[in-house]
Length: 531
Ligand code: DGJ
Image (cartoon, rainbow, N blue to C red; front, side, top):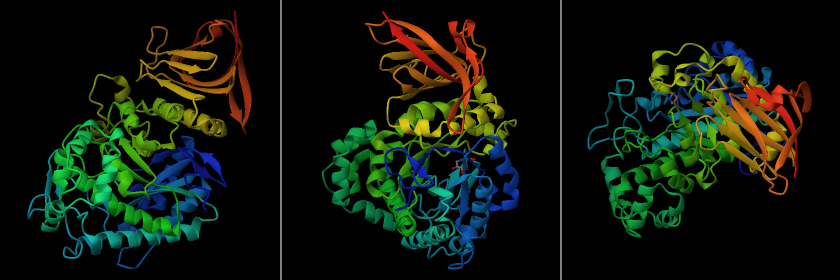
């Protein structure tokens, strides 16, 4: 068995079993089509302290003619990653890329008979999305077996190649199967085939699964399932949620076939990313995609997909994360904005959600002024200055390097309450409890100039803690009523070198009276509780 498969909740493993958090960046869509173009991007990743990258590998490039495979770019990217001592997650841009078929090879795109397009209305396969890049387009049908078979075959060849090229060294540690799949423009397809399937009975094992998994469901989905018939056609069983569930069933089943074809060859952990639903109707966001409200469907129909991963550009980042940890789904953020919440959010997802990975999208531009499209995507048009300011690259590098240097300590605490975090976006969750002691974290207070507070606390022993703090003041207190007083026996600023703590400054006096941090700082603190 490979050493990278997810052996227990919330761990990726590398190098013969070392737990690993992907401190990654995802490149812009076209960057990894050229190793030459990638050179300076690798340098930037090194400067940013990243330990891995997420890179698209596209169907059109690896199978330009049917049955003729060309994996040169895959080999070049693996070689570059190794030269820069980084791991890789490859993103398979197959039939789906943002609910479209941009990356299907031309032999697929041009054979309209064999590779059917999705009908968003009866007889119409054209989707007009005036508010999304102003484009109209058609896309491949999730019901077309020929497309799924061709996609799965290409993916299988890719995994076979990666296995041959990389099984020994294991540079590639994660695969994303497709990109933001689903159907735009309608909640379900409307071809005659789709209509017939929609009118037919829902497979009973699927109905039974849904009926027994209502506990985690979104309120309206649960209501639809609970009020629906216990057998029958899609409308009868799933009521108002029928069309989206129908799409999710078919998209997830399609992607599971692709993932299975690859896993059978080389069982790397596999994930599926989603374009979030923002309370709109399905079809406004890609219907059938792996959004949290369809997670029960995906967990049932796509068992070969290990992780459902949200692409988060919206402002209520933490609320979205909360939705994606249900059903024991480990948190992985493959795409997020590069505004100045990026650094604090990285620390928070590690400390609070024990995330597998975090990757700002288009990280190669991090720190540069936003383009108009960045501004649109990141929602910078608000009064919040953090959203309008690009992430400071030195600080982001500090966060990555610090987390990387603490990797064994952090991953050992994954899945336990010895690792916690607080962030400025969650002012009501400002207290962390660790047995005998607790820490209250104050942010956004008059004594602090910066507004991007974050604090991660790791309990090393009963009275010793490591703390990553920025933009906050930290107040330790006793949680033991028989020993209500607390002394700080020692407070050190420092860093880890080859796994060993190296103190850079002993803090006391004013620096202990108020533990206030204006810039990212790593601390080691020892407490003493007494009566
Ligand atoms: C989400 C997609 O998954 C990415 O590939 C990219 O298109 C961004 N949106 C927007 O640039």
